[in-house]
Amino acid sequence: MGTSRRLGGGVLLAVVVALALAFAFADRASAGGAAFRWKGQVETDISFSEFFANENTIMGRFMVQYPNAYRGPVFGVQLPRCLCAGGPSFELGMGSYTEAGNGAKLVLEVAGNAHFFTVPVPAGVWQHLALRRLNGLGVSVFQLYLNGVHWCADGPGPCDLTLAGFNAVPAGTLALGRTANSTTGNPAGLHQFYGLLDDVAVFSTALTSAQIQSYASLNHVLDGSEPGLYAGYTFDVSPSSPKLTRPVSFTGNAYLNPFVGATANWNSSKLDAKMLPLAAQPYIVRLPFAAGQQWKVIQPYAGATSHYGGSAFALDLQRVPAASTIGSPVYAPLAGDVVAVDDSHDEIGPGSCFKASTGTYTNCNFVQIQVSPGFVLSFRHLGKNSVPYELGDHVPANAQIATVGNHPNGAHLHFGARTDTDDSNPASTNFPLAFKNYKQLNADGLWETVALGVPPEGVTVSGM
Image (cartoon, rainbow, N blue to C red; front, side, top):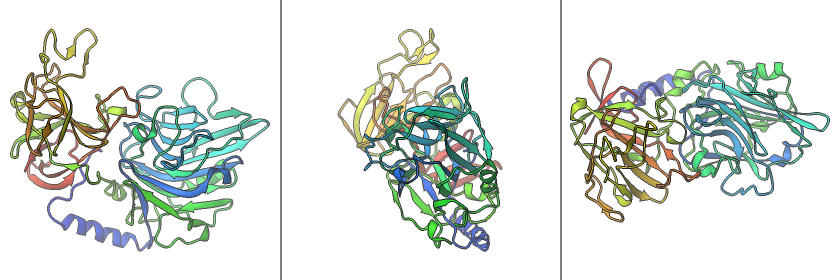
């Protein structure tokens, strides 16, 4: 994201936003939307066996938070209760930045067949996504629409995903935000949608292109009267039609935000973008440096330099002034046990982590602290022999755990959270943290207090 979502400066900002939303509610008095954080999923009670084998259309509005991250299923198959051993995979949403060439993209996967679409999917903007299935003579054709436009897949071959003789259906129910049974590894690791979702609809017919374009209009809000509508989810407090009242269950770190989609006009992206979620407890920490020190974010979450795909969620931090970075102390925001450590390498030159022959920086001079199962804090680009702990040691909260080392591309600390220590494990990934109680230098050169947020690229922050 290009801006930081802040609760700083007291409660005034929240009050102003709430008042603005209250006026917006005059247009749509019972609005709401689904918000997705790490491990967040919305479970529906719609079985794929109810609709998937026949011609159908699935659609919804989504606002992605991190376009350059890993796979983010808007639509998928319910987990964890659905093991899906008896049916094909199904996934529609954000593709990994690193799949099929670097870049933000959408992906459609059915029965292990993945189709990739390089389309404009900026962060913080409402998009309308639709998939229709057409059944012909011995084939099933799946067509993707974004904002009412039929898109072609990348690369050679047909625009649409065409499967011959396909009549199987995924085992389980429709899920939002996560998916089970995919070709690219354990979805608990590399498959998570981050952002907002609203106006989800399942049609028992293959809508025409004109119908999809009409429903994608910025002025259309799902009301239950749409021809062929089988079921829908507006996430409103009081849905206007029985077709919009089937139950949903928010699991993990997904939640209902009653302020999302407050206006009937979907041009309200700027307003709703302020509602993009921050991490939930226990994934809220302090910045890992001493109070009063100034550090600059030189690469943010989902940065274009190297923080993308399965490595999207880390911050690169450099001391201000930059010359003071080397040797600066690094602190553990939370207590935990050392589960991986290596600080034995020279920082530059022969024997260093940087390999000039390949231009890559290998996984050394680091320490990783397990806070709880599936939650590992990772610190990289550390100074040689600067970690005072060994494998298995317990590290208290706020203890110094290293100093920053040198780096051929400029000394900096690489800091983030992972599911485990094994980068090669397809189920391993990193996920976003949120940060509490720091100061941020604004565009006017003034310091403002941030109670909870994620500092964006180029911003200077100070610990408190």
